[in-house]
Amino acid sequence: MNIVKIILLPISFFYGLIMAIRNLFFNLKILRSKRFNIPIISVGNLSFGGTGKSPHIEYLIRLLKGKYSLATLSRGYGRKTKRFILASENSTSSDIGDESLQYKTKFRESVKVAVDENRRRGIKILFNKFPKLDVILLDDAFQHRWVKSGLSILLTDYHMLYCDDYPPPSGTLREFRCGSSRADIIIVTKTTSVLSPITRRRMTNIIKPKNYQSLYFSYIKYHDLRSLQNEDIIPKSKKFSTILLFTGIANSYPLQDRLRNKCTDLIVMEYKDHHKYSIKDISKIKKKYDDIYTKNKIIITTEKDAMRLLQPELIKFAKDLPIYYFPIEIKLHKDDAKKFDKQIIDYVKENKRNN
Image (tube, rainbow, N blue to C red; front, top):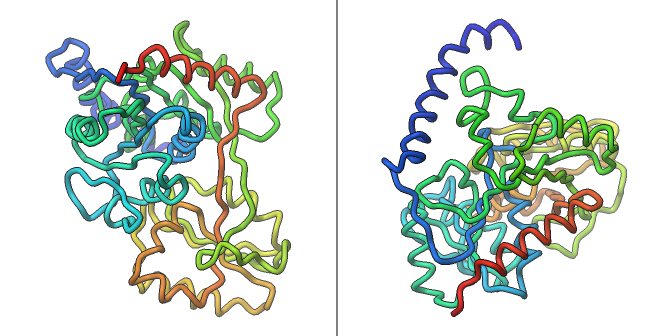
């Protein structure tokens, strides 16, 4: 830790203390969590983003769709709307947020996608609209204690474990590390695709999961590049002289590492997490691309950023640019997948309502 972060530690402690008092109020039932008569699985983290919540929600959707009637519910971070909205085919990221748009675009009728800043109200509305709903997946809800999840999944980045972090301004934690004790499942995300037993043991010894907590390890699988404009268009080359990467996510280092093997020169334009792109941004990206003096060049962004570009006012300005993105999927290591899948399915079976 550098000297500036050390100096700021008292402020970090004060921030964490405020959150600890809030959690204490819930533990003492001064503030009350609401239980619902339906399996509710929450996915969240201790840090301010960047652990891979969205692709892990998608993993759960793939696991449960076709077997159960399910819905996702989030606050819809970055949307311009308020209160409850049920996603439709015409929804945009301004309506429901980029993560929710991604779920709706990928899974369509396989899952009901809803947003509401008040999760209690959102769950009640989902109940009323879909009485035969079997499962609700709460996105980014680890700190949302007004709703009592039946199964809580906590994510932590392999390269930025919550065990080594602090509340702001010295770190990125939303609360003290001890908050991890509320999780039923801990997943170390963004590991390498090959994980040695030694590394697994080392991570386990660092995290020290409780007896009631399951610990799993996941990694990112990248699919083939897709065009922003037309999914049927594929890049003419697999190796490029220059790749221009622009991102508006918390941590783009896994994608940067991947792209460095696919080009001679990687140029990165980074925006803040959940950045709302403007025509001015598109113009800057176009200028940067035009200034690259090679024919074998391409523009790449993340899947989440691609969702934000699918706005009527933006897409027409981006249509002449060769913008591609990597659809991603979460994989769990070795026996982790079987154990995790069984734990999720068993929980849903045991708690499913008799409609």
